[in-house]
Amino acid sequence: MCRTHSHGHSGRRGWGHRFGRFGNREDWLARLEHYQRDLEQELADVADVIRRLKEESPPESPPQTASV
Image (cartoon, rainbow, N blue to C red; front, side, top):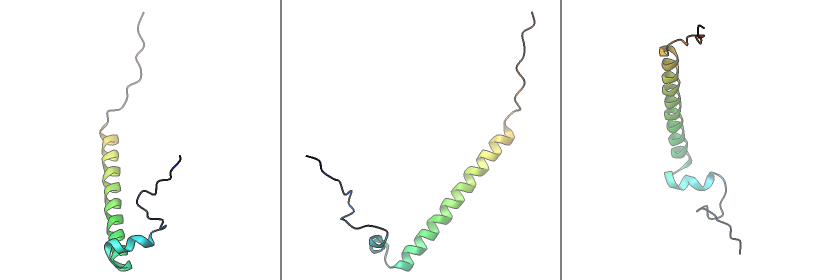
């Protein structure tokens, strides 16, 4: 027998049902905006590390050929 799994969604769809977890719509919006700022800062930090690693990497030397 094949069963479907709702994964705790209780048949409700979309973001609207989640407002209850954090309060009203304004609270939900404020929390999401704060989370977005955190993610943007994290992304900037990762980009900075990548940039520094690229700047600090030694230049690749051309392959040396064996003298015969």
